Length: 436
Image 1 (spheres, rainbow, N blue to C red):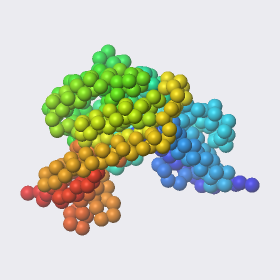
Image 2: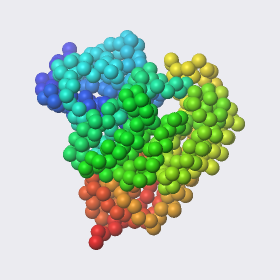
Image 3: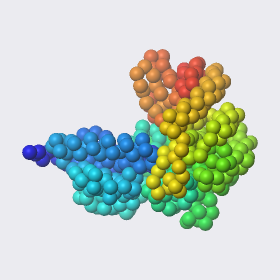
Image 4: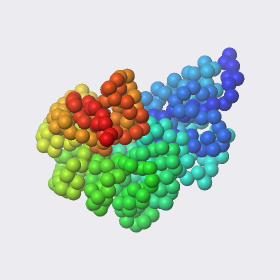
């Protein structure tokens, strides 16, 4: 017979999935702390809240395995309560309740007040910008909008996150000021679609205005843009990027494919010609911009010819940063009505071929950096190296700059000027340039 833990209630928040989930967990933890709750992130606690991802098959599997792991701990008596929230729970709550009934309660993505109530806490509306950040102290995610109005055929995010809803500029500035006061120097702006920002509350695309206000926040030195959409991109953002040193010359713009037939089926709203023109406009406006994109291979109906077109385009475009996913057949999306006709091994082979091309491009571009000087921010120390990034690199997904800790000392969270001494596919090696 299991016995209840005699430990004082400690709430362990476990985060799975994307940066939006990281942000949501930080807001939850901030609310719990304001209620004088003992809360930790991915440490031991007798009450567990799992913030799940439900985006694609691999992410769903990881979320389910994590739920099962903590349910087993509950059955063994090392955990008292297990709560599940986030995208998987939003999307599959009835199925989860039936299949894994030993979870105490399931909550969707918009049920934070109810989750807090279950944790014997009150939702405090006045806590604008109050979060417990879980990223390294020098950077933080700033979620500027929730949900998405785009009709992409392969994507279940609108099902899980709802319609696009922008956060007012004044609230985001308050949040940025609070983050800066804690020592955050880099803001990473996130949303399902940054380019849609403001349409709902200001009746115009207002990302450039938001950037101009965030630039004024003292202590913030870098502002980075994640997850733009190619259709309807607000070109005034490029002007701000070019003229304002605080806005990194970097954009993450998932393009997904380049074959017109595939893009049309994906309901992306732009074909090859428009996408190529947009990239040309980006490079003309900000010549040293780093463009990160992500692609999907193995989408229903993707022929060998479509794939060869994609490969040739990747080779020609020479993206500074690129990731590739295999298509995941998701219920309740419009692509689910199509036959998932590309075999899994072919999907994997195609993804590998794309990444081989990109690896070579990345190596070549990195070789050109040897001997050049860059400003880097130091995220952490790992083994014999301090690990930093340039303005052209986002945490976790992009290149890192490795600095020998035996030769150079830098505090984590600080900026430093470095000279690149060596380069690999996705790593740069550097030495610190002494300050005069």
